[in-house]
Every structure is written in C-alpha cells, then in structure tokens.
Image (cartoon, rainbow, N blue to C red; front, side):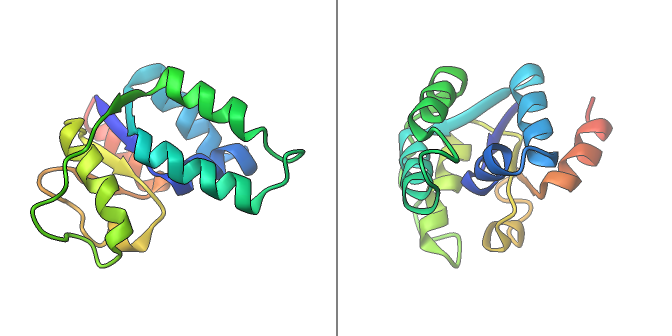
Amino acid sequence: MKLLCDTNVLIAALVARRTCSDLLEHCVRQHVVVSSQSLLNELRDVLESKFSPRAIDARAALRLFADTFTLVTPDTLDSPACRDRDDDVVLATALVGECAAIITGDQDLLILDPFRGIRVLAPSAFWKWESEHR
C-alpha cells in the first residue's frame, strides 16, 4: 500500500520518538512511503528553523528520507482543495503517488477525509484503518 506521512508526522517521529516513530518505522517496512521534494524542503525548513543541530541532524534525516521514500513530482491541483493552501502540495503529492492514505495531524487536512478516494487519517486512526484493510 502507498502512504504519505505528512511533515508533522515526520517531525514527531524525529523529536518525540514514540507513537509517530513506531508508525513511520512500520510504514517504511510494510508499505511504500511517498513524498516529494517540495515536502522534503518543507521538512528541512522546519527542522532548521525550529530545532538546534544538536537536537536533530536535519541533513542526515533528509538524506535518509530521500533514500527511503518514493519521491514523486506533484501536479498543481485544478483548484484549491484545502483551507490552508500550503497543504495543497500534500494532497497533490498523494494524488500523483496514488496513495491509499495520508497520515497527518493537521486539522486542515483531516477535515477533508476522504479526499478523492484517499483516506486522510490521524496517526492513531491509521492503525485501526490499516488493520481493517489487510
């Protein structure tokens, strides 16, 4: 199954090392994790602006994600789909990547569930949904 882990999930996986890190590890091992250079750039910007280099090695994390994830080039959506226009790239990436689900903690995305046949799930909801789709 193809999945997209939103930036907030990746940051939580790197920082908190609890639920989201377990989720990310599971997704990488059991599924195809889709992303785009735009989303990795957003992740880099957040990591570099909000966390000290001692807390997180942003370059190493980005290299690991770029080597592990399947990167696609999203198209621009025909019309804005999300109330936060910056999140349209998440939706466009998931569409081009033919993802079954987007895993996110972003309320602007979660209210769209489902989006054009793609489930938009919080990390806790993903586990239940996945168990129902095995």
